[in-house]
Amino acid sequence: MAARCNTPSVNLLSLLLLLSSALFVAADDNSVKDACSKAPDQQFCVAFLSGIPGSRTVDARGLAELGIRAAAKIGAAEGTAARTQLNLVTIKGPQWQCMDSCVADVEEAVSHLDVDRGKGGVTAIDDAKFNDARDYVESAEKDGLTWNCDQCRDGLTAPVKTGLLPKGNEFEKVMGAVTALIKRAGGSAAPAPAPGPS
Image (cartoon, rainbow, N blue to C red; front, side, top):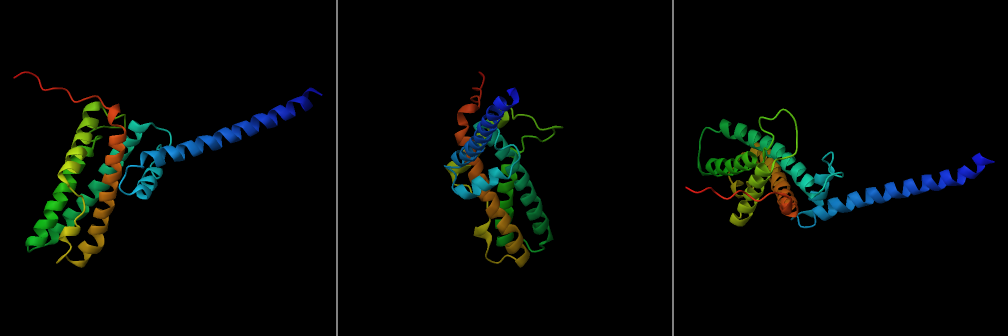
Protein backbone atom coordinates (compact mmCIF):
# COMPACT_ATOMS: atom_id res chain seq x y z
CA MET A 1 0.00 0.00 0.00
CA ALA A 2 2.86 2.40 0.81
CA ALA A 3 4.33 1.96 -2.65
CA ARG A 4 0.99 2.79 -4.16
CA CYS A 5 0.79 6.09 -2.24
CA ASN A 6 4.26 7.13 -3.43
CA THR A 7 3.45 6.59 -7.11
CA PRO A 8 1.36 9.75 -7.47
CA SER A 9 4.03 11.67 -5.55
CA VAL A 10 6.76 10.32 -7.82
CA ASN A 11 4.69 11.16 -10.89
CA LEU A 12 4.01 14.64 -9.55
CA LEU A 13 7.68 15.12 -8.74
CA SER A 14 8.66 13.92 -12.23
CA LEU A 15 6.15 16.30 -13.79
CA LEU A 16 7.46 19.22 -11.72
CA LEU A 17 11.06 18.41 -12.70
CA LEU A 18 10.07 18.18 -16.36
CA LEU A 19 8.25 21.51 -16.22
CA SER A 20 11.08 23.25 -14.37
CA SER A 21 13.66 22.00 -16.88
CA ALA A 22 11.47 23.23 -19.74
CA LEU A 23 11.20 26.61 -18.04
CA PHE A 24 14.98 26.64 -17.49
CA VAL A 25 15.61 25.99 -21.20
CA ALA A 26 13.09 28.69 -22.14
CA ALA A 27 14.76 31.10 -19.72
CA ASP A 28 18.16 30.30 -21.28
CA ASP A 29 16.79 30.96 -24.78
CA ASN A 30 15.33 34.24 -23.57
CA SER A 31 18.59 35.31 -21.92
CA VAL A 32 20.49 34.73 -25.19
CA LYS A 33 17.78 36.63 -27.07
CA ASP A 34 17.86 39.39 -24.46
CA ALA A 35 21.64 39.58 -24.71
CA CYS A 36 21.35 40.02 -28.47
CA SER A 37 18.48 42.52 -28.40
CA LYS A 38 20.80 45.48 -29.06
CA ALA A 39 23.03 43.76 -31.63
CA PRO A 40 22.89 45.14 -35.18
CA ASP A 41 21.98 41.66 -36.53
CA GLN A 42 19.97 40.02 -33.76
CA GLN A 43 19.39 36.72 -35.58
CA PHE A 44 23.11 36.34 -36.27
CA CYS A 45 23.92 37.18 -32.66
CA VAL A 46 21.53 34.53 -31.30
CA ALA A 47 22.95 31.91 -33.68
CA PHE A 48 26.51 32.99 -32.84
CA LEU A 49 25.95 32.73 -29.07
CA SER A 50 23.95 29.52 -29.33
CA GLY A 51 26.90 27.92 -31.12
CA ILE A 52 29.26 28.62 -28.22
CA PRO A 53 29.38 25.90 -25.56
CA GLY A 54 28.46 27.23 -22.15
CA SER A 55 26.57 30.25 -23.45
CA ARG A 56 23.35 29.13 -21.78
CA THR A 57 24.83 28.84 -18.30
CA VAL A 58 26.62 32.16 -17.77
CA ASP A 59 25.64 35.69 -16.79
CA ALA A 60 26.02 38.85 -18.91
CA ARG A 61 29.74 39.14 -18.18
CA GLY A 62 30.23 35.47 -19.03
CA LEU A 63 28.41 35.90 -22.36
CA ALA A 64 30.63 38.88 -23.19
CA GLU A 65 33.74 36.87 -22.32
CA LEU A 66 32.62 33.95 -24.50
CA GLY A 67 31.90 36.38 -27.35
CA ILE A 68 35.27 38.08 -26.97
CA ARG A 69 37.12 34.75 -27.13
CA ALA A 70 35.13 33.57 -30.16
CA ALA A 71 35.65 36.89 -31.96
CA ALA A 72 39.40 36.66 -31.35
CA LYS A 73 39.52 33.18 -32.94
CA ILE A 74 37.39 34.18 -35.93
CA GLY A 75 39.37 37.39 -36.45
CA ALA A 76 42.70 35.59 -36.18
CA ALA A 77 41.61 33.08 -38.83
CA GLU A 78 40.40 35.87 -41.10
CA GLY A 79 43.58 37.89 -40.62
CA THR A 80 45.82 34.91 -41.35
CA ALA A 81 43.87 33.99 -44.50
CA ALA A 82 43.92 37.59 -45.70
CA ARG A 83 47.65 38.01 -45.10
CA THR A 84 48.31 34.78 -47.01
CA GLN A 85 46.33 36.07 -50.00
CA LEU A 86 47.91 39.53 -49.83
CA ASN A 87 51.42 38.09 -49.70
CA LEU A 88 50.77 36.38 -53.05
CA VAL A 89 50.11 39.72 -54.76
CA THR A 90 53.17 41.04 -56.58
CA ILE A 91 51.83 44.44 -57.62
CA LYS A 92 50.93 46.42 -54.56
CA GLY A 93 48.52 48.95 -56.04
CA PRO A 94 45.61 50.84 -54.46
CA GLN A 95 43.41 47.75 -53.99
CA TRP A 96 46.20 45.89 -52.23
CA GLN A 97 46.76 48.91 -49.99
CA CYS A 98 43.04 49.05 -49.23
CA MET A 99 42.98 45.37 -48.28
CA ASP A 100 46.22 45.71 -46.28
CA SER A 101 44.68 48.54 -44.27
CA CYS A 102 41.47 46.58 -43.72
CA VAL A 103 43.34 43.48 -42.60
CA ALA A 104 45.43 45.61 -40.24
CA ASP A 105 42.16 46.76 -38.60
CA VAL A 106 41.15 43.11 -38.08
CA GLU A 107 44.58 42.29 -36.67
CA GLU A 108 44.34 45.22 -34.29
CA ALA A 109 40.91 44.02 -33.13
CA VAL A 110 42.37 40.58 -32.45
CA SER A 111 45.20 42.10 -30.44
CA HIS A 112 42.63 43.64 -28.09
CA LEU A 113 40.35 40.60 -28.00
CA ASP A 114 42.88 37.79 -27.64
CA VAL A 115 42.62 37.65 -23.87
CA ASP A 116 44.07 34.15 -23.61
CA ARG A 117 47.35 34.84 -25.41
CA GLY A 118 50.15 33.11 -23.54
CA LYS A 119 47.83 31.35 -21.10
CA GLY A 120 47.76 27.60 -20.72
CA GLY A 121 44.03 27.33 -20.04
CA VAL A 122 40.85 29.32 -20.26
CA THR A 123 39.95 31.23 -17.14
CA ALA A 124 37.77 34.21 -16.41
CA ILE A 125 38.99 37.35 -18.14
CA ASP A 126 40.55 39.70 -15.64
CA ASP A 127 39.11 43.20 -15.39
CA ALA A 128 42.09 44.88 -17.10
CA LYS A 129 41.74 42.71 -20.23
CA PHE A 130 37.97 43.05 -20.21
CA ASN A 131 38.32 46.83 -19.92
CA ASP A 132 40.82 46.85 -22.81
CA ALA A 133 38.37 44.95 -25.02
CA ARG A 134 35.51 47.20 -23.91
CA ASP A 135 37.49 50.40 -24.51
CA TYR A 136 38.58 49.15 -27.93
CA VAL A 137 35.07 48.30 -29.17
CA GLU A 138 33.65 51.55 -27.77
CA SER A 139 36.38 53.57 -29.48
CA ALA A 140 35.96 51.65 -32.74
CA GLU A 141 32.20 52.20 -32.65
CA LYS A 142 32.67 55.92 -31.97
CA ASP A 143 35.18 56.17 -34.85
CA GLY A 144 32.89 54.26 -37.23
CA LEU A 145 35.44 51.48 -37.77
CA THR A 146 34.24 48.52 -39.78
CA TRP A 147 35.84 45.10 -39.94
CA ASN A 148 34.90 44.10 -43.46
CA CYS A 149 36.73 44.94 -46.63
CA ASP A 150 33.79 45.59 -48.95
CA GLN A 151 35.16 49.06 -49.79
CA CYS A 152 38.12 47.24 -51.42
CA ARG A 153 35.94 45.02 -53.65
CA ASP A 154 36.65 46.68 -57.02
CA GLY A 155 39.69 45.28 -58.78
CA LEU A 156 40.25 42.37 -56.42
CA THR A 157 41.01 38.90 -57.73
CA ALA A 158 38.30 36.26 -57.57
CA PRO A 159 39.85 34.28 -54.66
CA VAL A 160 39.89 37.42 -52.53
CA LYS A 161 36.32 38.36 -53.45
CA THR A 162 34.90 34.88 -52.88
CA GLY A 163 37.10 33.81 -49.99
CA LEU A 164 38.02 36.79 -47.87
CA LEU A 165 35.18 39.25 -48.27
CA PRO A 166 32.52 36.86 -46.90
CA LYS A 167 34.77 36.12 -43.90
CA GLY A 168 35.12 39.86 -43.34
CA ASN A 169 31.37 40.29 -43.42
CA GLU A 170 31.02 37.50 -40.85
CA PHE A 171 33.63 39.14 -38.61
CA GLU A 172 31.76 42.44 -38.92
CA LYS A 173 28.61 40.70 -37.61
CA VAL A 174 30.59 39.00 -34.84
CA MET A 175 32.02 42.35 -33.76
CA GLY A 176 28.52 43.86 -33.75
CA ALA A 177 27.36 41.04 -31.47
CA VAL A 178 30.43 41.35 -29.22
CA THR A 179 29.98 45.11 -28.93
CA ALA A 180 26.36 44.59 -27.79
CA LEU A 181 27.43 41.89 -25.32
CA ILE A 182 30.20 44.03 -23.85
CA LYS A 183 27.86 47.01 -23.47
CA ARG A 184 25.29 44.78 -21.74
CA ALA A 185 27.93 43.54 -19.32
CA GLY A 186 29.56 46.97 -19.01
CA GLY A 187 28.73 47.35 -15.36
CA SER A 188 30.40 44.03 -14.63
CA ALA A 189 33.92 45.27 -15.26
CA ALA A 190 35.90 47.28 -12.77
CA PRO A 191 36.59 50.81 -13.96
CA ALA A 192 40.00 51.37 -15.48
CA PRO A 193 42.43 52.68 -12.87
CA ALA A 194 43.18 56.38 -12.96
CA PRO A 195 46.70 57.27 -14.07
CA GLY A 196 49.10 57.86 -11.18
CA PRO A 197 50.68 61.22 -10.48
CA SER A 198 53.59 62.12 -12.72
